[in-house]
Amino acid sequence: SSSVKDLSRLALRAPVIVRAQSASLSSTVAGLEQGYVVCPMAQRFLLLFTFLKKNVSKKVIVFFSSCNSVKFHAELLNYIDLPVLDLHGNQKQNKRTTTFFEFCKAEKGILLCTDVAARGLDIPAV
Image 1: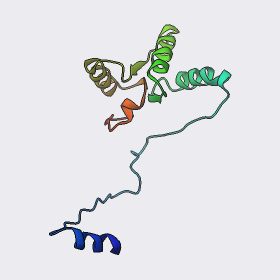
Image 2: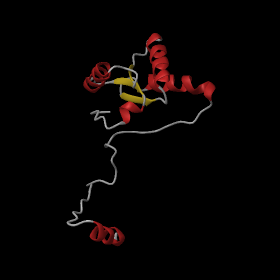
Image 3: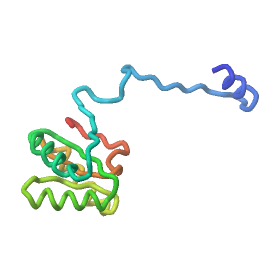
Image 4: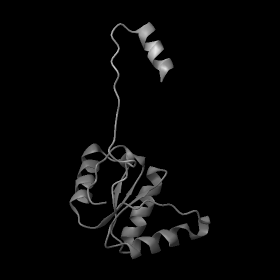
């Protein structure tokens, strides 16, 4: 904007303008489906379990708000024979890296994680 140009001319000796441009209007990969559901607490696990069972042949990432929630749901789902991977900030870096690459290499799978996985991880074919 003109006010930024004026300020840069006053405050800087040799300002350089840097712009970021994108060919697309969206940063979401084609084919990626994002969504969320608001439901009563009592139905939350049943809804999650049903969704994951219906999408077991795809790659799915489910974000949770805490490390304890990721651990709880991962243990429970693995116990009832729905294999999932878990990724959260309380894990050692080596474990997080191993889990991340295991999920990337898989053709299908479920990854339960906290926002540690939302920080710029490039996961192909999700």
